[in-house]
Amino acid sequence: MRNCLAALFPTLLLLTFTASGQDAVFSQFYAAPVRLNPALTGISTASRITMNYRAQHTSYPSAFTTLAASFEQPIYKTPSSFGLRMLSDRHLEGAYRNTDIALIYSYDIQFTKVLHARLGISAGILNTSLDFNRLVFGDVLDPINGQEGITQEQLESSARTAADVGAGIILYGGPYYGGISFEHLNRPSENVLQLNDQVYAGRPLRFTLTGGAQIDLESLSTKRRAVYITPNLLYTSQARFRQINLGAYFGYGPVALGGWYRHAFENADALIASVSFRQDIVRIGFSYDAVTSELASVPGGLGATFEVSLVIDFGQSEKLQRSRFRSRYSECFRMFQ
Image (cartoon, rainbow, N blue to C red; front, side):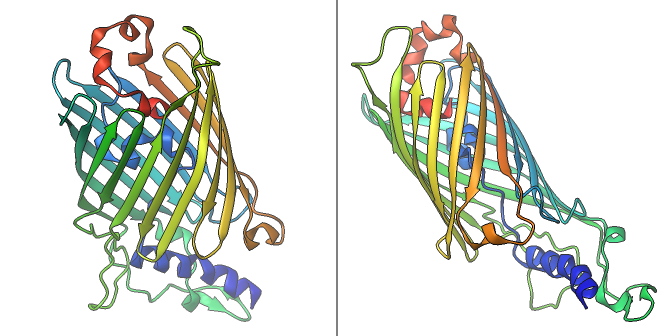
């Protein structure tokens, strides 16, 4: 019976994701700004490249691994910016994959000398693929002979690609910022199994709210070493899943330390610790999630959950730091840069 359940579990999990897939949410959300809100595209003064890797519960079968990358290009002396983002998310030991690619456009609107709004839209494709050869269905399990025969499950296709649209807005002024975003506005289909006609396997709309502030500690800062604290929050909901992250980022020159508490509403989820280091235009970050829910007592353990981020921000070069054009941008976005 245990072997049967082990074989059925990936299938049940697959059906759950097929009927109501969910997006990967990075613990280092500030190091993946264009995934957080398309309106954050182009907040630097020059080109920026971002890469993120997340490994979740590395000792647990069917764990998630996520790889993301993005490129941003603000258009000099205009309020417009363009971006490209890509993400590959796999689970069920690689049998089930999600890949999305999107183009992004953002536009900065200035209301007063201090108050601005940034609008962003994204449009691309969402691809869902399934390797049926790596799955075991219940109808091929025999209590005596084990796995044999061919499944009678109605397999619709091994991959599906659909258009995907999102939008967001960020308001900022002085040291404060806040915004909302909506992903999967058109509920793109990701159905790779033949479902009942009454079931629509579209990716649920994801709502994200974020906000924070940049508090400069002037008494500790020098011209060559900025010292600051950025309290911030992230709230996101998708279908029945809801999550909130509360914490702060403390920057001391090229080094920054962060701590967050993540709560998934149904249960306390994790404590997140992060550290990053910047050298000229390059910033490298590492974070670790310490599970605080009942999942921490799973037999055998879940294994580590960690993320690595790499940001190459050409706007952080000394030459552009001295440029007058930099005054267009608010320092409240420092944690995203």
